[in-house]
Length: 290
Image (cartoon, rainbow, N blue to C red):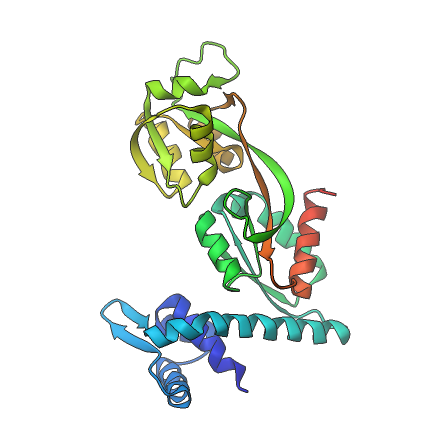
């Protein structure tokens, strides 16, 4: 079986662009078309429809895509296991995570991992909770680094407790306080992250029994911080998200205290590849988690 055509099919399904997938995989655009047309003849049905914005999958292609991704995941696992038996460290590893984790944790983790396993290629997918869970469930990603909220379908390994913080303009009347009551949030225009991106903030609001005056919704944490810094309102974000933006806003703990649990999510019905197991162990070692 020629696995490369299935790899190309899955890549085009992700990029929705023949040229981009060809560049990533070393094909010319005519070469991509040739491989996929041969695959269509073999399968007996079309795979892609051309549109002005790129290509879309046919309904039959949508049906086989999850199976193709599972096939590729098993093939990668087999390749890594054989390489491991033969004393070689090669393979491909896809990590799905929040942008905040990509910025804060992953550079040092990847550096430590590459010191030991230089032959393993790493790909990052960034998105919200729903994106990450979906990528792991359909085998597009080997593992996810995310919040536990709404990740119940994944096998879970806890890593870190991340406090939720009140995000305020620089001139907010803090008056020497060390925490901001949740009830006070109701008094100001509120900027909120979209629910599919960050369930933890929505959960904290619900548990606190408050009704914020929501004026703006964003899928990007840095947009939320920028809006707060420009006095468009207040917000609540995880501490890890704030990072170097601390100079632009005020960030104080909430009263009562709320947090999110960050960890590693993997498919519940299959084991991790050798590379994914090593990466998970490197995360724990780098972050000094037992």
